[in-house]
Image 1: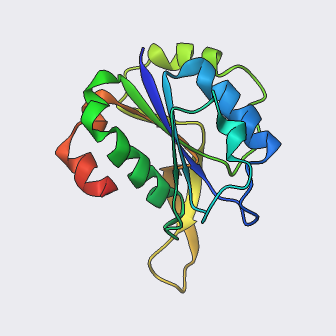
Image 2: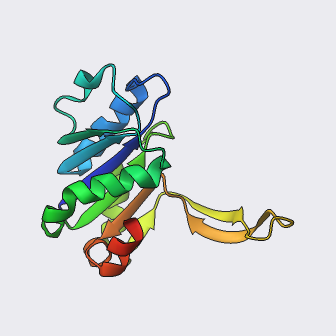
Length: 160
């Protein structure tokens, strides 16, 4: 299985923290390419990413994780067909605390178009008087898309 990771990063001090390096090392074990996209003006210690990531994009865009995902996806656009899965992950969590290989081995056996690490059963409603409600969704801090999804026009239009 050939995988690419688009990793969304932000740090108010323009740093890559140790926990991010740890996370990237774990992602490197299950992927062939990591695109590191930072929503910063510059990275003070960018050299820590040497040998871990394939490409670095540092650009203040103020579009949160999906702004970084969009930029990484656009960078990969010409070679998307080379991959079986694309992973969108961000630096908002610590870990992993177990091998990602085990999780990916299990998920390879499942018939699905995409999956994520966490399903959240609650979310915001459009009606402001009823803020929280039953709105199941996959959390976007770690989501995996199969080729039939990320090569589709619908996905391309969405991510743009």
